[in-house]
Amino acid sequence: MTIEATLIPGDGIGPEIIDATTRVLAALGAPFTWDVQQAGIAGIAAHGSPLPNETLDSIRRTRLALKGPLTTPVGGGFKSVNVALRQEFSLFANVRPARTLIPGGRFDDIDIVLVRENLEGFYAALEHYIPVGDDAQAIAMSAGFNSRAECRRIITFAFEYALANGRRKVTIVHKANILKILTGLFLQVGRDVAQDYAGRVEMDERIVDACAMQLVMNPWQFDVIVTTNLFGDILSDLLAGLVGGLGLAPGANIGEHAAIFEAVHGSAPDIAGQGSANPLAVIGAAAMMLDHVGCIDLAARLREAVRLTLCVDAVRTRDLNGEATTEAFTNALLRRIEA
Ligand code: NAI
Ligand code: MG
Image (tube, rainbow, N blue to C red; front, top):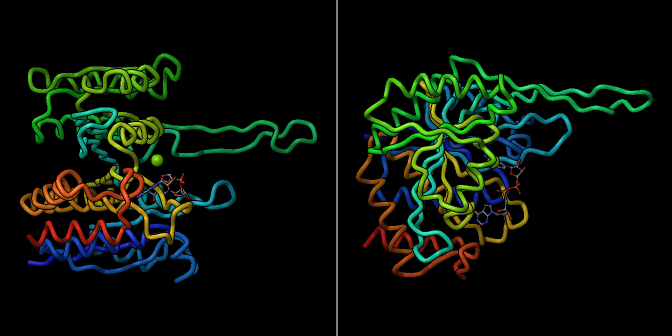
């Protein structure tokens, strides 16, 4: 059995860590065959567009993609390609697990899954300037929106995820005390959905700023977190920090008809081309992709090989205070997979 999937190497460190990941998947005997396509700066270079039609057509066909990070220039006329991809394929759920891989860090035994609404909120970025006097950009305006339907879909997804993965609690994170309508609707729908799961999955709620503090003070009280788009973006980097940084944090963008797997981190231009990037965030995303297509055993084997490489062989990249290059780390992981 083979499964065709789109492979987007991406920008910056993308090609280096995607290359490491496909080597690892091949050694595992994963069923994927890759249709390699470009996006981001690489898409502009190849086809004159950050999101070429070739790439969209490929994902329309395969409905499954593994992607490296894409550079989005700040400001200017560029819409984020990542956001555009999520919109194009209605990838409404962004699942970002944070699990301790290396014991003895600042926080031990962390195991939290953040479920982020991926299509609405302030990521709508409905923005404009209001001129005052001779200042054309005197006031910056932004509007966000949350729909009842999408709130229901993402919160239901979080509770179903909890049930399917043997988790006990879902915490709804909001700012309904201030954004009474925008995030009040999210909370209201959350309370409603939670009733359908009463006795099966516990429900809890937090205001986002308090949640940020409590994630640092006592992260063990959290299990599954569900929240709106921007809060989810911010809290998922916080969660990555609890477990050793962005180099370890994978994510999945899930829709009803397609799924795209990627790291939480970006293209890391500061270390691109140096061969020092940690490939584990994308490799973790590949493990989620294996779970997604039902290759649970391969995903478990991959995670165990990662654990042995990090914790028994103590081979680690620079971001984890190790000395291994991307290449050396990947070779060490391949030895564990082939053992
Ligand atoms: P970033 O995540 O690329 O980098 C933040 C810091 O973490 C940097 O110091 C970087 O060296 C380090 N880092 C990230 N990944 C690492 C890895 N695998 N191994 C070792 N160190 C790693 O965030 P930044 O610099 O804010 O964004 C750079 C570009 O990436 C921007 O254009 C941004 O829009 C884009 N971006 C793309 C995302 C995506 O494709 N899903 C997500 C986040 C940002
Ligand atoms: Mg982010």
